[in-house]
Length: 374
Image (cartoon, rainbow, N blue to C red; front, side):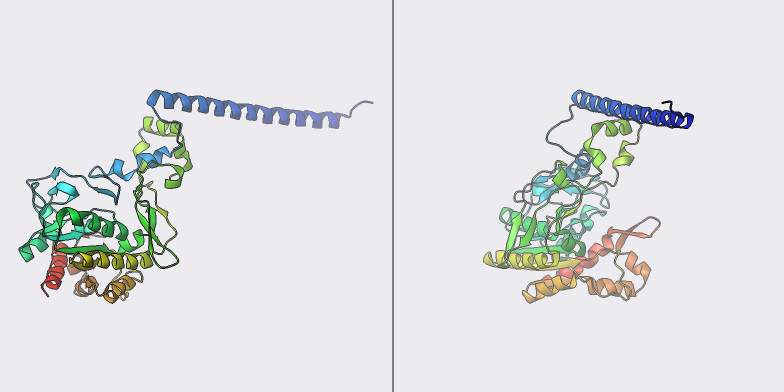
């Protein structure tokens, strides 16, 4: 029985379609095999590990890789690296780090004093974007005419600040400890990975006690549980190609890992202050809590941040001496935008707020000195 011309034509189209699909599949498999062989070869030639599996982009973006002024610390995750002496001849830009990762109050590394005031906080306390002598702990030292140790470092959360105070206290034996949170540090305490670095974090158990996690802090490696970088970062071939095209740096820029833990940052911050009060009371060390704010806050017709006000309230309920800089900053804002901007280092044609300027640090130093003098 003969097949009709139309049926023959239909069978021919189907046959061609199957052959086309088969060719495409063969090409795809060939490309995958070629990519796999190339991936293996490149890893062998360049010494790139096969196991454990890590996201290579995340590993390249690790805080301790990109921020060379920092080094690993098992208690807090990272600290400023001792022995840095940057721009020693310029008091407006000098950056000097001494023993224990402490920032000096003047250019030149000197012994860290004992029986001093110890200030611990994030970059707003460390004095980012101003010279050594203009950070507020350095200005506080001159106001008090008494030693102040700056034990802060950029990027820390409330939990790291409290732990750093506990770590430095037996080393330098201060008579007063100042724990200074930036408002954002409260929220940072809900992260277990922050800015491509592992950090300590706390939860609160059923009986209301703090539970310390990541103790000691594991070094960041870019493994899947630490990384939010794109999936392609697990393969070396595309990274190698982008680097050869001169696009590697742009490709990696801004790809940092931030992973939250299941915890309440406000409740944890309050519990941390309770822990700090008990710790310093046992040693008869005076404790002062300071809350700072970035200039990006909208101070116009805006109440204090919903996550900051409760922490201030907690500190006061615990009878911890407290300096909340919000009223002073609000007053500066109400005096005029230029007056307010003068308190911060401005960027992008005076539109983006950076860290506090020398004048802003002076304001904080004065508020703290007034409290310590009461």
